[in-house]
Every structure is written in C-alpha cells, then in structure tokens.
Image (tube, rainbow, N blue to C red; front, side, top):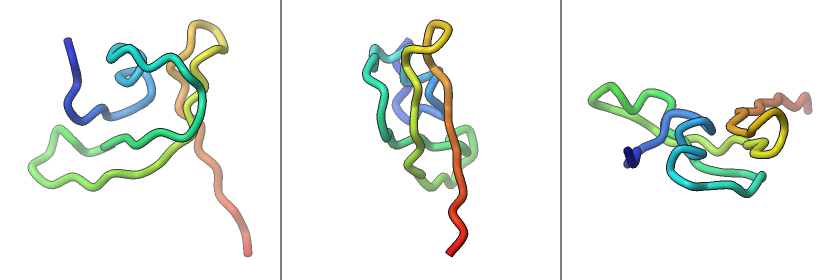
Length: 58
C-alpha cells in the first residue's frame, strides 16, 4: 500500500523509494494535524528503511 504521508523511512521504502538521502516524512501523520520534517534515510544497510536523526550544537 502507498503511504500518502509516510511516517518514517520504512514507509518510504514501502512506497518504492530506494535512494539514501534526505527525505520528507510526517511522523505524526496518523493524527489530524501533522507537520513534515526532513530526515536522512539509509536505504542500503540491512535492507534499508532506516531513519537517521542527528542534532547539531551551535
């Protein structure tokens, strides 16, 4: 099934996205209000679908 607003990289992978890189996900898409965020998706390691998050200190 296609996910209109994928919650994570695993759902992007189910949608056919196979390229690692920065992608937009909707982590609260099962709720009525949802904001998108950009995350790095590793689509190669152990079958792919990994959501990688990072923080930066300024």
